[in-house]
Every structure is written in C-alpha cells, then in structure tokens.
Length: 149
Image 1 (cartoon, rainbow, N blue to C red):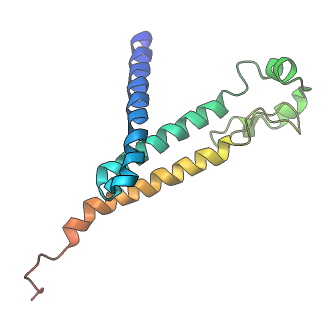
Image 2 (cartoon, rainbow, N blue to C red):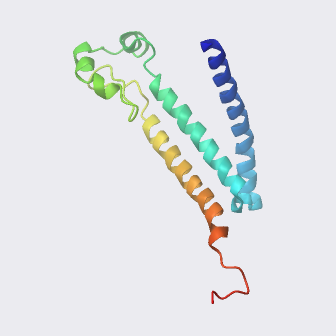
Image 3 (spheres, rainbow, N blue to C red):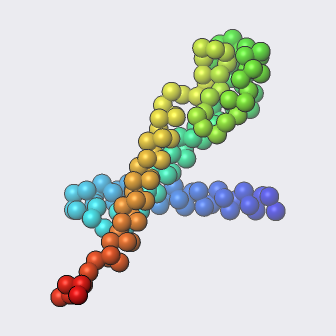
C-alpha cells in the first residue's frame, strides 16, 4: 500500500512539474499579450511559485543527506562538531528556517534556500490575493442603471 501511495505522489508531482513548465511559457506570453488581467494567469503564477518554493525547501531540507557527519567530512571537507550539533539539534529539526550545520561556521543548507522559500511564498500569497479579488470584485459591483435608491 505504501508503494502505491509513493507512486501516486510521484505521478502527481510529475504532472504538476510538466504543467508548471507549460505555465512558464504561458506566463511569459501573457505578459506580452496582457492576459495578466485574467484570473488563469494569476493561478499559473501561484502554481509556479508554489512549485519553486517547494523545490527550494526540499533542496534545503535534504542538503545534509542521510548522514550529516559524512556529508561534512567527505563532501564538504569540513570538521563535524557533534557537541555543537547536539546542542542545536532542535533548531536544525525545524521546518523553517532551514539549517544543517557541520559546526558553528559551516551550514550545509545553501544561503539562497531560505530567501527563495520566503520569496516564493510571498509571490504565491500575492497571486492568491489577486485571485480572491477576481472572485469578490464582481460580487461587490453595483449594476449599471441602479443608483442604490
């Protein structure tokens, strides 16, 4: 059952990736043609930024690999300080901001990951706000010919 769930998640993510690659082309074309005035353009922006944010977060979350000590010593050629890691383990296990340090000076999470996650979240929220405006604005308009009396 777990294998079927993993396959289903992989297929969904693959379809989402392909759809977002198509969306990148549509977003760029929409800037030239003015389709940014339509809700679907903003839905595409929201989807692309969510995928980019998720990919950035996953890059940071798995930057240490399965064994942080080995990643520090053999991949990054840095000293692994087990006492430092144990003292700050709670911070390193948080979902955000992402950190996975070898010692007090070397972080395995690239410096661009946390700002990219925040930027993508901000773009997604802005696009969702515009989509909400597209949904609410027609409901609040007064029909022409009626002056409210």
